[in-house]
Image (cartoon, rainbow, N blue to C red; front, top):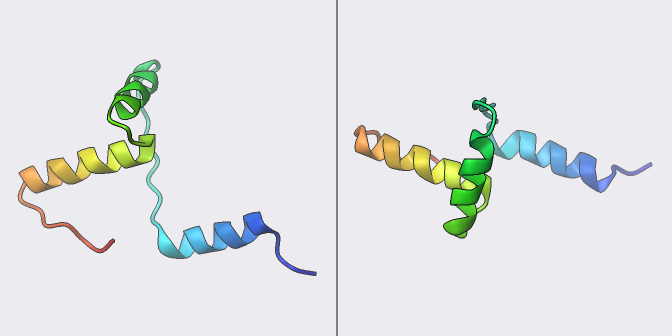
Length: 65
């Protein structure tokens, strides 16, 4: 029996990506989501961009993509 599409994607994602859990105060997610939409980005892309900008400001070089 073959793997489902979801199982295949999950296996790939575990190999290709690290996962970080983010906790925010209630209501802030909606604010961040709205800002991401205004910027034309997904919530994930918006958060990654913010982290990379802060790391650059702090003198860290960009790691492997």
